[in-house]
Length: 395
Image 1: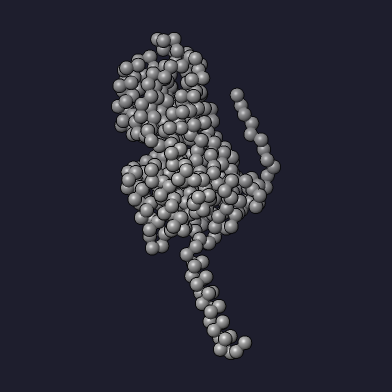
Image 2 (image 1 turned 120 degrees about the vertical axis):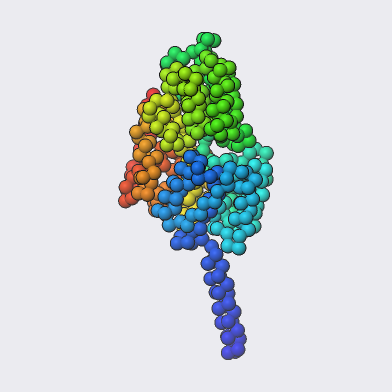
Protein backbone atom coordinates (compact mmCIF):
# COMPACT_ATOMS: atom_id res chain seq x y z
CA UNK A 1 0.00 0.00 0.00
CA UNK A 2 1.48 3.40 -1.00
CA UNK A 3 1.66 6.38 1.34
CA UNK A 4 -0.86 8.19 -0.87
CA UNK A 5 -3.34 5.29 -0.62
CA UNK A 6 -2.90 5.14 3.13
CA UNK A 7 -3.57 8.85 3.44
CA UNK A 8 -6.79 8.58 1.41
CA UNK A 9 -7.98 5.63 3.47
CA UNK A 10 -7.27 7.49 6.72
CA UNK A 11 -9.15 10.53 5.44
CA UNK A 12 -12.08 8.38 4.39
CA UNK A 13 -12.27 6.65 7.78
CA UNK A 14 -12.07 10.01 9.54
CA UNK A 15 -14.93 11.31 7.39
CA UNK A 16 -17.07 8.27 8.22
CA UNK A 17 -16.43 8.74 11.93
CA UNK A 18 -17.49 12.40 11.73
CA UNK A 19 -20.72 11.47 9.91
CA UNK A 20 -21.50 8.78 12.50
CA UNK A 21 -20.77 11.20 15.34
CA UNK A 22 -23.08 13.84 13.89
CA UNK A 23 -25.82 11.26 13.33
CA UNK A 24 -25.58 10.01 16.90
CA UNK A 25 -25.87 13.57 18.23
CA UNK A 26 -29.45 13.77 16.89
CA UNK A 27 -30.50 10.50 18.52
CA UNK A 28 -31.73 10.01 22.05
CA UNK A 29 -29.13 8.89 24.56
CA UNK A 30 -29.68 7.99 28.23
CA UNK A 31 -28.43 11.48 29.16
CA UNK A 32 -30.28 13.38 26.44
CA UNK A 33 -33.86 12.17 26.03
CA UNK A 34 -36.16 14.78 24.51
CA UNK A 35 -39.90 14.09 24.75
CA UNK A 36 -42.89 16.16 23.66
CA UNK A 37 -46.25 15.46 25.25
CA UNK A 38 -49.19 16.73 23.19
CA UNK A 39 -51.84 17.51 25.80
CA UNK A 40 -55.20 17.77 23.95
CA UNK A 41 -56.70 20.15 26.51
CA UNK A 42 -55.61 23.15 28.60
CA UNK A 43 -53.86 23.61 31.97
CA UNK A 44 -57.32 24.28 33.44
CA UNK A 45 -58.54 20.75 32.66
CA UNK A 46 -58.40 18.93 36.00
CA UNK A 47 -57.72 15.46 34.63
CA UNK A 48 -55.16 16.43 31.99
CA UNK A 49 -53.44 18.81 34.41
CA UNK A 50 -53.06 15.96 36.91
CA UNK A 51 -51.61 13.69 34.21
CA UNK A 52 -49.22 16.44 33.07
CA UNK A 53 -47.96 17.25 36.58
CA UNK A 54 -47.45 13.55 37.31
CA UNK A 55 -45.41 13.25 34.09
CA UNK A 56 -43.31 16.30 35.01
CA UNK A 57 -42.43 14.74 38.37
CA UNK A 58 -41.47 11.50 36.63
CA UNK A 59 -39.43 13.29 33.97
CA UNK A 60 -37.46 15.14 36.66
CA UNK A 61 -36.67 11.85 38.42
CA UNK A 62 -35.68 10.11 35.16
CA UNK A 63 -33.68 13.03 33.77
CA UNK A 64 -35.94 13.41 30.73
CA UNK A 65 -36.32 16.74 28.93
CA UNK A 66 -40.14 16.95 28.75
CA UNK A 67 -42.00 19.55 26.69
CA UNK A 68 -45.77 20.01 27.10
CA UNK A 69 -47.77 21.37 24.16
CA UNK A 70 -51.47 22.17 24.74
CA UNK A 71 -54.18 21.57 22.15
CA UNK A 72 -56.82 23.82 23.78
CA UNK A 73 -59.64 21.26 23.38
CA UNK A 74 -59.66 21.71 19.61
CA UNK A 75 -59.04 18.46 17.75
CA UNK A 76 -58.18 20.18 14.48
CA UNK A 77 -55.72 22.50 16.19
CA UNK A 78 -54.19 19.58 18.12
CA UNK A 79 -53.79 17.54 14.94
CA UNK A 80 -52.01 20.41 13.22
CA UNK A 81 -49.76 20.80 16.26
CA UNK A 82 -48.69 17.17 15.89
CA UNK A 83 -47.64 17.80 12.30
CA UNK A 84 -45.86 21.02 13.30
CA UNK A 85 -43.89 19.19 15.99
CA UNK A 86 -42.84 16.45 13.57
CA UNK A 87 -41.84 18.98 10.90
CA UNK A 88 -39.54 20.95 13.17
CA UNK A 89 -35.93 21.32 12.06
CA UNK A 90 -34.95 19.53 15.26
CA UNK A 91 -37.98 17.43 16.32
CA UNK A 92 -38.11 15.59 19.66
CA UNK A 93 -36.87 12.03 20.00
CA UNK A 94 -40.26 10.86 21.23
CA UNK A 95 -43.86 12.09 20.89
CA UNK A 96 -46.60 11.11 23.36
CA UNK A 97 -50.14 11.84 22.18
CA UNK A 98 -53.69 10.63 21.79
CA UNK A 99 -54.83 8.87 18.65
CA UNK A 100 -56.51 11.45 16.42
CA UNK A 101 -59.61 10.09 14.70
CA UNK A 102 -59.24 9.89 10.89
CA UNK A 103 -55.77 11.49 11.13
CA UNK A 104 -54.02 9.22 13.61
CA UNK A 105 -52.42 6.78 11.21
CA UNK A 106 -51.19 9.65 9.05
CA UNK A 107 -49.49 11.16 12.09
CA UNK A 108 -47.86 7.79 12.76
CA UNK A 109 -46.71 7.83 9.15
CA UNK A 110 -45.34 11.37 9.46
CA UNK A 111 -43.53 10.41 12.69
CA UNK A 112 -41.97 7.45 10.89
CA UNK A 113 -40.69 9.73 8.14
CA UNK A 114 -39.31 12.18 10.73
CA UNK A 115 -37.64 9.40 12.72
CA UNK A 116 -39.64 10.27 15.85
CA UNK A 117 -40.80 7.45 18.12
CA UNK A 118 -44.50 7.73 18.96
CA UNK A 119 -46.39 6.42 21.99
CA UNK A 120 -50.19 6.55 22.08
CA UNK A 121 -52.09 7.04 25.33
CA UNK A 122 -55.69 7.53 26.51
CA UNK A 123 -57.57 7.60 23.17
CA UNK A 124 -57.27 4.33 21.28
CA UNK A 125 -57.23 3.41 17.60
CA UNK A 126 -60.82 2.92 16.35
CA UNK A 127 -61.64 -0.29 14.55
CA UNK A 128 -61.94 1.42 11.16
CA UNK A 129 -58.35 2.74 11.44
CA UNK A 130 -56.66 -0.40 12.75
CA UNK A 131 -55.60 -1.65 9.33
CA UNK A 132 -53.96 1.67 8.43
CA UNK A 133 -52.36 2.25 11.83
CA UNK A 134 -51.26 -1.31 12.54
CA UNK A 135 -49.87 -2.39 15.89
CA UNK A 136 -46.78 -1.05 17.70
CA UNK A 137 -43.44 -1.74 15.99
CA UNK A 138 -45.12 -3.41 13.01
CA UNK A 139 -46.25 -1.32 10.04
CA UNK A 140 -44.53 1.74 11.53
CA UNK A 141 -41.37 0.64 13.42
CA UNK A 142 -41.22 4.03 15.18
CA UNK A 143 -44.70 3.44 16.63
CA UNK A 144 -43.10 2.36 19.89
CA UNK A 145 -46.02 1.55 22.18
CA UNK A 146 -49.74 1.83 22.82
CA UNK A 147 -50.73 2.36 26.48
CA UNK A 148 -54.47 2.31 27.04
CA UNK A 149 -56.63 2.15 30.16
CA UNK A 150 -59.23 -0.61 30.26
CA UNK A 151 -62.14 1.82 30.21
CA UNK A 152 -64.73 -0.85 29.52
CA UNK A 153 -63.78 -2.99 32.53
CA UNK A 154 -63.46 0.03 34.82
CA UNK A 155 -66.89 1.34 33.83
CA UNK A 156 -68.39 -2.12 34.23
CA UNK A 157 -67.02 -2.49 37.75
CA UNK A 158 -68.00 1.08 38.67
CA UNK A 159 -71.54 0.50 37.41
CA UNK A 160 -71.88 -2.78 39.29
CA UNK A 161 -70.82 -1.11 42.53
CA UNK A 162 -73.24 1.75 41.91
CA UNK A 163 -76.14 -0.64 41.34
CA UNK A 164 -75.22 -2.78 44.35
CA UNK A 165 -75.12 0.28 46.62
CA UNK A 166 -78.45 1.49 45.25
CA UNK A 167 -79.96 -1.89 46.07
CA UNK A 168 -78.35 -1.83 49.53
CA UNK A 169 -79.94 1.57 50.25
CA UNK A 170 -83.31 0.49 48.82
CA UNK A 171 -83.39 3.32 46.27
CA UNK A 172 -85.87 1.65 43.92
CA UNK A 173 -88.17 4.10 42.16
CA UNK A 174 -91.88 4.08 41.36
CA UNK A 175 -91.29 1.24 38.91
CA UNK A 176 -90.05 -0.97 41.73
CA UNK A 177 -86.62 -1.01 40.10
CA UNK A 178 -83.51 1.12 40.33
CA UNK A 179 -83.75 3.91 37.77
CA UNK A 180 -80.44 5.07 36.31
CA UNK A 181 -79.46 8.11 34.21
CA UNK A 182 -76.22 8.10 32.20
CA UNK A 183 -74.26 11.22 31.23
CA UNK A 184 -71.33 10.38 28.97
CA UNK A 185 -68.51 12.16 27.14
CA UNK A 186 -67.83 12.94 23.49
CA UNK A 187 -69.45 10.43 21.16
CA UNK A 188 -66.49 9.67 18.91
CA UNK A 189 -63.76 9.11 21.52
CA UNK A 190 -62.75 5.59 22.50
CA UNK A 191 -63.05 6.45 26.20
CA UNK A 192 -66.72 7.35 25.75
CA UNK A 193 -67.52 4.32 23.62
CA UNK A 194 -65.84 1.87 25.99
CA UNK A 195 -67.22 3.41 29.17
CA UNK A 196 -70.71 3.31 27.67
CA UNK A 197 -70.21 -0.37 26.83
CA UNK A 198 -69.18 -1.15 30.40
CA UNK A 199 -72.24 0.65 31.77
CA UNK A 200 -74.62 -1.13 29.42
CA UNK A 201 -73.08 -4.52 30.18
CA UNK A 202 -73.58 -4.01 33.91
CA UNK A 203 -77.19 -2.88 33.46
CA UNK A 204 -78.02 -5.77 31.14
CA UNK A 205 -76.84 -8.22 33.76
CA UNK A 206 -79.24 -6.80 36.36
CA UNK A 207 -82.98 -7.46 36.36
CA UNK A 208 -83.59 -4.73 38.92
CA UNK A 209 -82.13 -1.75 37.02
CA UNK A 210 -83.62 0.42 34.28
CA UNK A 211 -81.57 2.77 32.11
CA UNK A 212 -83.90 5.74 31.74
CA UNK A 213 -81.69 7.67 29.30
CA UNK A 214 -78.05 7.94 28.23
CA UNK A 215 -76.95 11.37 26.94
CA UNK A 216 -73.62 12.85 25.86
CA UNK A 217 -72.27 16.03 27.45
CA UNK A 218 -68.95 16.17 25.56
CA UNK A 219 -67.00 16.19 28.86
CA UNK A 220 -68.50 19.62 29.64
CA UNK A 221 -69.50 20.48 33.22
CA UNK A 222 -71.99 23.11 32.12
CA UNK A 223 -73.62 20.76 29.61
CA UNK A 224 -73.81 17.97 32.19
CA UNK A 225 -75.39 20.33 34.69
CA UNK A 226 -77.98 21.51 32.18
CA UNK A 227 -78.77 17.94 31.08
CA UNK A 228 -79.09 16.65 34.65
CA UNK A 229 -81.52 19.46 35.48
CA UNK A 230 -83.80 18.33 32.64
CA UNK A 231 -83.34 14.58 33.23
CA UNK A 232 -84.00 14.69 36.97
CA UNK A 233 -87.26 16.48 36.34
CA UNK A 234 -88.18 14.09 33.53
CA UNK A 235 -87.36 11.07 35.70
CA UNK A 236 -88.04 12.16 39.32
CA UNK A 237 -87.70 8.57 40.59
CA UNK A 238 -84.16 8.21 39.22
CA UNK A 239 -81.78 7.49 42.09
CA UNK A 240 -78.57 6.51 40.26
CA UNK A 241 -76.53 8.79 37.99
CA UNK A 242 -73.53 7.41 36.13
CA UNK A 243 -71.20 9.99 34.57
CA UNK A 244 -68.15 9.39 32.39
CA UNK A 245 -65.95 11.94 34.17
CA UNK A 246 -65.51 13.49 37.59
CA UNK A 247 -65.85 17.01 36.19
CA UNK A 248 -69.34 16.15 34.97
CA UNK A 249 -70.13 14.27 38.18
CA UNK A 250 -69.36 17.34 40.29
CA UNK A 251 -71.69 19.45 38.14
CA UNK A 252 -74.44 16.84 38.51
CA UNK A 253 -74.02 16.81 42.30
CA UNK A 254 -74.47 20.58 42.37
CA UNK A 255 -77.60 20.40 40.21
CA UNK A 256 -79.12 17.50 42.14
CA UNK A 257 -78.72 19.37 45.40
CA UNK A 258 -80.23 22.51 43.84
CA UNK A 259 -83.31 20.41 43.01
CA UNK A 260 -83.62 19.28 46.63
CA UNK A 261 -81.97 15.88 46.28
CA UNK A 262 -79.41 14.63 48.82
CA UNK A 263 -76.35 13.24 47.01
CA UNK A 264 -75.11 10.15 48.77
CA UNK A 265 -78.47 9.50 50.43
CA UNK A 266 -81.47 9.53 48.11
CA UNK A 267 -79.38 9.71 44.94
CA UNK A 268 -76.00 8.12 44.16
CA UNK A 269 -73.58 9.63 41.65
CA UNK A 270 -70.33 8.23 40.23
CA UNK A 271 -67.61 9.52 37.93
CA UNK A 272 -64.19 8.73 36.50
CA UNK A 273 -60.73 10.35 36.71
CA UNK A 274 -59.81 10.67 40.41
CA UNK A 275 -59.68 14.47 40.43
CA UNK A 276 -58.94 16.20 43.74
CA UNK A 277 -62.50 17.58 43.86
CA UNK A 278 -63.89 14.09 43.36
CA UNK A 279 -61.78 12.68 46.19
CA UNK A 280 -63.08 15.39 48.52
CA UNK A 281 -66.65 14.60 47.42
CA UNK A 282 -66.10 10.90 48.13
CA UNK A 283 -64.78 11.90 51.53
CA UNK A 284 -67.90 13.95 52.35
CA UNK A 285 -70.21 11.31 50.85
CA UNK A 286 -71.73 13.34 48.01
CA UNK A 287 -69.91 11.25 45.36
CA UNK A 288 -70.22 7.51 45.79
CA UNK A 289 -67.23 6.39 43.70
CA UNK A 290 -64.75 7.29 40.99
CA UNK A 291 -62.92 5.01 38.56
CA UNK A 292 -59.39 6.00 37.66
CA UNK A 293 -55.70 5.33 37.30
CA UNK A 294 -55.45 6.38 33.65
CA UNK A 295 -53.67 9.58 34.66
CA UNK A 296 -50.61 7.31 35.01
CA UNK A 297 -50.53 6.46 31.30
CA UNK A 298 -48.21 9.30 30.33
CA UNK A 299 -45.80 8.48 33.14
CA UNK A 300 -45.70 4.82 32.13
CA UNK A 301 -44.93 6.01 28.59
CA UNK A 302 -41.94 7.90 30.02
CA UNK A 303 -40.72 4.74 31.78
CA UNK A 304 -40.85 2.87 28.46
CA UNK A 305 -39.06 5.75 26.72
CA UNK A 306 -36.32 5.74 29.36
CA UNK A 307 -35.76 2.02 28.87
CA UNK A 308 -35.82 2.33 25.10
CA UNK A 309 -33.12 5.00 25.20
CA UNK A 310 -31.11 2.68 27.44
CA UNK A 311 -31.49 -0.25 25.05
CA UNK A 312 -33.97 -2.10 27.27
CA UNK A 313 -37.27 -1.05 25.72
CA UNK A 314 -40.24 -3.34 25.13
CA UNK A 315 -40.48 -5.63 22.14
CA UNK A 316 -43.57 -5.69 19.94
CA UNK A 317 -45.39 -8.23 22.14
CA UNK A 318 -44.97 -6.07 25.25
CA UNK A 319 -45.79 -2.79 23.52
CA UNK A 320 -49.54 -3.28 23.05
CA UNK A 321 -50.71 -2.48 26.56
CA UNK A 322 -54.19 -2.49 28.12
CA UNK A 323 -54.04 -1.25 31.72
CA UNK A 324 -56.39 -2.22 34.50
CA UNK A 325 -57.88 0.74 36.36
CA UNK A 326 -59.36 0.77 39.86
CA UNK A 327 -62.33 2.16 41.81
CA UNK A 328 -62.08 4.54 44.76
CA UNK A 329 -64.87 4.59 47.32
CA UNK A 330 -64.91 5.86 50.89
CA UNK A 331 -63.59 2.48 52.08
CA UNK A 332 -60.23 2.73 50.27
CA UNK A 333 -59.91 6.51 49.89
CA UNK A 334 -57.21 6.96 52.55
CA UNK A 335 -54.97 4.39 50.87
CA UNK A 336 -55.14 6.10 47.48
CA UNK A 337 -54.65 9.60 48.85
CA UNK A 338 -50.98 8.68 49.40
CA UNK A 339 -50.58 8.23 45.64
CA UNK A 340 -52.75 11.16 44.58
CA UNK A 341 -51.17 13.85 46.76
CA UNK A 342 -49.15 16.12 44.40
CA UNK A 343 -46.95 17.16 47.33
CA UNK A 344 -45.55 13.62 47.41
CA UNK A 345 -44.88 13.22 43.70
CA UNK A 346 -41.47 14.92 43.78
CA UNK A 347 -40.18 12.30 46.20
CA UNK A 348 -41.67 9.24 44.49
CA UNK A 349 -39.44 6.52 43.08
CA UNK A 350 -40.41 6.69 39.39
CA UNK A 351 -37.27 4.74 38.48
CA UNK A 352 -38.94 1.69 40.00
CA UNK A 353 -41.28 1.67 36.98
CA UNK A 354 -38.36 1.06 34.60
CA UNK A 355 -36.49 -2.14 33.95
CA UNK A 356 -33.25 -0.16 33.57
CA UNK A 357 -33.20 0.22 37.36
CA UNK A 358 -34.46 -3.30 38.03
CA UNK A 359 -33.47 -6.56 36.43
CA UNK A 360 -33.37 -7.11 32.67
CA UNK A 361 -36.15 -9.68 33.04
CA UNK A 362 -38.34 -7.39 35.14
CA UNK A 363 -41.85 -7.01 33.78
CA UNK A 364 -43.52 -3.65 33.60
CA UNK A 365 -46.16 -2.83 36.21
CA UNK A 366 -49.28 -1.66 34.42
CA UNK A 367 -52.04 -2.70 36.83
CA UNK A 368 -52.92 0.49 38.73
CA UNK A 369 -52.47 -1.16 42.13
CA UNK A 370 -49.05 -2.55 41.16
CA UNK A 371 -47.93 0.87 39.91
CA UNK A 372 -49.01 2.43 43.19
CA UNK A 373 -47.09 -0.20 45.17
CA UNK A 374 -43.88 0.47 43.27
CA UNK A 375 -44.13 4.24 43.46
CA UNK A 376 -44.62 4.26 47.21
CA UNK A 377 -41.54 2.12 47.89
CA UNK A 378 -38.32 3.80 49.08
CA UNK A 379 -35.84 4.54 46.28
CA UNK A 380 -33.46 1.77 47.41
CA UNK A 381 -36.22 -0.85 47.68
CA UNK A 382 -37.63 -1.87 44.30
CA UNK A 383 -40.29 -4.47 43.70
CA UNK A 384 -37.80 -6.53 41.68
CA UNK A 385 -35.82 -7.11 44.88
CA UNK A 386 -38.82 -8.28 46.85
CA UNK A 387 -40.73 -11.57 46.75
CA UNK A 388 -43.87 -11.50 44.62
CA UNK A 389 -46.99 -10.98 46.67
CA UNK A 390 -50.33 -12.16 45.38
CA UNK A 391 -53.05 -9.54 45.55
CA UNK A 392 -55.75 -10.28 48.12
CA UNK A 393 -59.34 -9.62 47.17
CA UNK A 394 -61.86 -8.58 49.79
CA UNK A 395 -65.52 -9.19 49.05
